[in-house]
Length: 406
Ligand code: LLP
Image 1 (cartoon, rainbow, N blue to C red):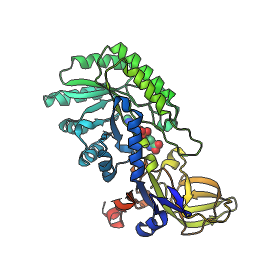
Image 2 (cartoon, protein in one colour):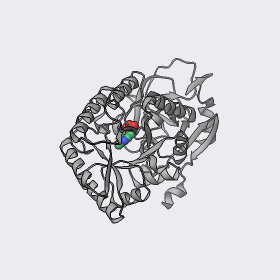
Image 3 (cartoon, rainbow, N blue to C red):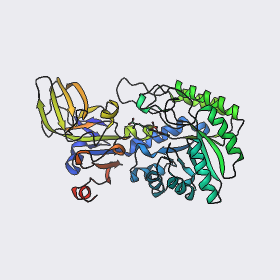
Image 4 (cartoon, protein in one colour):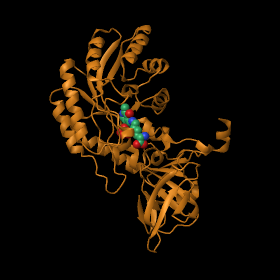
């Protein structure tokens, strides 16, 4: 996104033009940006050409998954719905991994029928359930086992998954025991060790540490894992002062690890592929002056983008049209929902806004629309893709008819 003649543009189309035609709030994705992200991701790890499974939970839009598939990516899914969506988008089942701590028998059954690459199991009881279902089908099912490496990802506690107090993965002692169990099983084919220590990780050192633990555990198992699934979690810069992840260092430690093991690496990135590809265009409903501060009440709310309310996450906000006057206003940007956490951010030195002005929330491609809801019975926003400066509606705005009939 950049300003051309003081107008904020996405791939040369002005936000104002998009808003006029499609209304607000609107999620607007840039094809150019996600193409760049995918190519950069591949380039960063090209020496060992990993299987890249896009984490569908970060963005489950069918049209976007179809576009992502064109670059040869697979999918990381965590529910039957996500698995169905990945298959509907045409992703090859042999490029799909199924993660998650609570897969139901129904979901396991479906995944086995679809012959996906791996079901990444997260507990002894889950492995036994997979074994039972596989046996009833007289099949041998490929699984991964998720190790809990007890590694601090140095990210927000709400999105940290690799420590022993987290519900995810299997601890080392149990992991070693279960490898022995799987070796003897007729219906379980243990192919993969998987890990995922958290999301929005900006420091490469937790990854290094995680790899050291993985190395130590594999040595103890004396088992040849065909795949090592390192999960996702690569962070992006939301704010000016955010550092960015040092991919070179991460790549080097994986290469070092691969000198000892002849395994294929799998990644499950979500945010790093789709996070910075979208903006959320919104209109000012009211400017509400209060004795302490001025509120900008937007037509976008926590039901459309819950990250600020849920994690205190900050998404940069910029005006669609820059004014000449000096920017000296302090504003609190909020939505219309009846909750005090329905707040996006407080900004100093913003240009003066008035009703009907447009503003844009940045970097909302990951965990934006996928975490949206109908809270307060608000309609879900439209999603638009800008590709080669042409606009395609990739999900229609919900209507009251949709809402009232559901
Ligand atoms: N693999 C597994 C097993 C995961 O649990 C996740 C994310 C990913 C891959 C993808 O992680 P990513 O590359 O996107 O960081 N709603 C939160 C993030 C939750 C992440 C959940 N798991 C947010 O908005 O920050």
